Amino acid sequence: MEEKYGGDVLAGPGGGGGGSGLGPVDVPSARLTKYIVLLCFTKFLKAVGLFESYDLLKAVHIVQFIFILKLGTAFFMVLFQKPFSSGKTITKHQINGSLKIPGRKEFKDKKLNDPRKLVRN
Image (cartoon, one colour):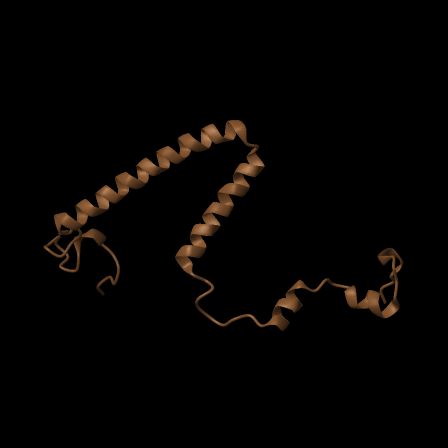
C-alpha cells in the first residue's frame, strides 16, 4: 500500500524535485523597489521615533509619555479604520444604558443618602 503522506515535502507533486518545487518567485523589479524604499523609510522613521522618545522621556514622566503615545496611536487608528462612518449607529437609549450607574435606581426608590446603609436582599 502506498503511503499517503511521506517522503520529501519540498520535492513537489512530481516526487523527484522537478520544476514544481519551492523556489524563487518572479517579481517585477519596479514593484520590489517600491517596497524596499518603503521599508527603508519606515526603518528611518522608527529610528527617529526612538531617538525623540529617549529625549522626551528625560523631560516627561513615563506614565504621561505612554498616555500621549497611546492617544496618538488611537488617533491614527481612528483615521485609518473610520469606525464612525460604517455600521449601525448607537441609539440614545443604548448610550444611556451603557452609562448607567449600577444601583442608582435602588437609591432613588429607597431614598437613601448613604450608600453604605443600603442592604441588598
